Length: 507
Image (cartoon, rainbow, N blue to C red; front, side, top):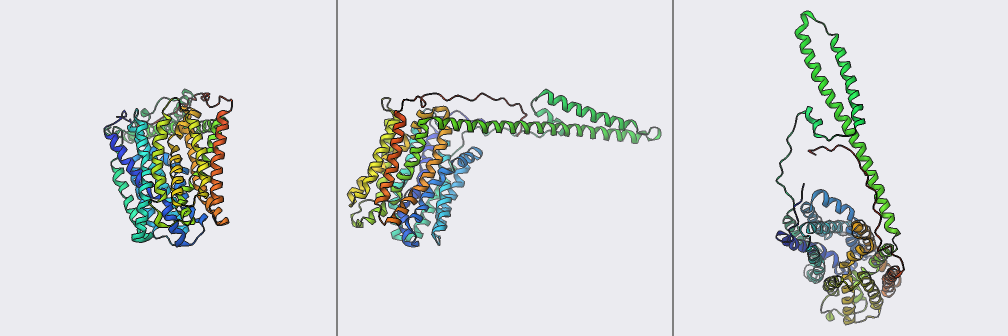
């Protein structure tokens, strides 16, 4: 299947629009899960650490399963994956309304909804990259704001639905809204020429003609086998009777010839397929060895190793505020009458602003994106350490805005990764980093919740979160300032390995 050239417009803008709404609909509830978190605490009476697993799984599972999500989109295409994932997200949300305990929510909301979100994120990014080339950065920036806008709107929407219909009714309505993902997926027209004729079926004796020429040594070996087989068949034919049985002998000879021809074709086909499987296995093994070698080479890069530690610590400490900020306000005895806007909504709208502004700053040549990323980490660590001192709605709102803006550093993270490892290794390195980012997102909220269960206050929990983010920022800063040119040095390319094997033309 041959893909057409990226149009950089046209139907591509429709792809951007539906991808924006897809991320809006799928990530709105999981990112604004802090509103549901308070209701689940009251409904099930479990500890804060155990209850926080629900929201952390919903955000982390998609990143942890990113290799599987990429494989699904590559195998089936963005449109089928989007439609299937829409059923997963909507079904998981509706099932959560019938949850009898917190363990059921781990599966329905944490795993089902989280995996659906991961599949949808990969599908929207993949099809947007196919439709855009020169304007790819703008297109990806536009669709990435869908999740932040969803966080802003769903925080207030879920709170309103809970007041009107209760927790169960809220989840049912939000799940019904997620069914609109199916309509968005139906508009994701694949960018390829689908009008190619299907290959016609051929006779059995023409099967070997559809294969390419392979190793001459193997071919000669198979021909010798076939010659011996033909010799044995001719010897058998020479012993047939003559005379009155001429007609029967002629019929038997024709049957034997046809059988011999089928035997030759079958043996040759088996030999070809066996050789193909051997060469394919060798190629897969070599690719696996190359992948492991490239991974080891990446971790020899000091800046990449520091970036790996920084992103892991950032997600452990930086993700809990979006989940727990509403409960922090309730623990600080902030009255509901003082709430002008939900704190999670403030985080969401400022994350959108942060993504856009930090992305614009990263395009200036005189700004080092690595140092810009380090500055966001250190500033966010200090803001997290200041949360325990905030005892009013105004101070919590200001800190929420700062944390939300700095969380927008996700938009410059690909720039930092490219600067560290080079464009050739970007996909490999980014996949590794996203896996551990998902691991950090899954562990962060439960750890903060366990600190509260242990101390009955969020003070130590947020000191711990701020320390994690600060530690990651300083480690990355030291690695960037160290006199090593590892990050600017091109990694050696592995020597090309040639494999000669047969490929069927109509597979």
